[in-house]
Length: 109
Length: 119
Image (tube, rainbow over all chains, first blue to last red; front, side, top):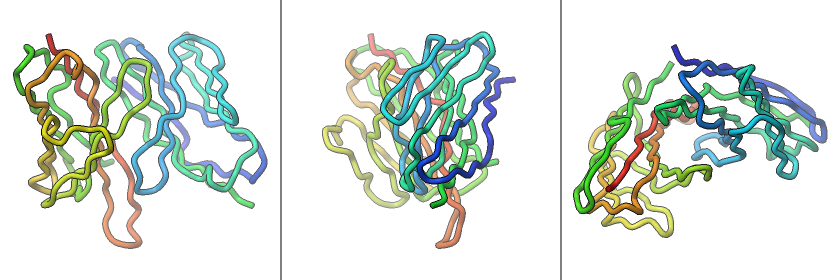
């Protein structure tokens, strides 16, 4: 079956760096997305990876290894407003989006 | 865990026809559902917020008469793309909020999406 795995919860300190991992097993691959979701709100897009390597956008970076079925989201210089859930989603060969359950990131001062 | 079912997963239609997409929360009641649109390699764009028993709230730039949303029950919201044209071809995703009450642990669950191709 198709599966996306990411940690349920992570805790980090303000100003630090945190890496959120995502592993996937899907039938085909047409891109991997990371979204940020604050409680009760719609998700906001963070990044899209379709080729192997690192994509950097300001404080956020996303890495993809298709051969390993692995991605991570790296958040630098953490701020309190970064406390949210981070969702990993993969588009399979049928263009279906397979969603991870999300990682709740708690930032402590 | 909570499941959101979206149907159909893929639809191809002729220009000028209308297409209905269903979003169901299978094991929880969802007073609020969201509808998104996603273009290739682009971000997820929120189209509207659907509230059970009331009119949907549309985001700026989204045509209400073009994208009809009906949230008639606590488990079903539908999006109808009326008089579809090729520029409406896109990936449409719904999501639903589970959890009730002030102290409920509210989470957002997503459907698997619908790929619409208008010829």
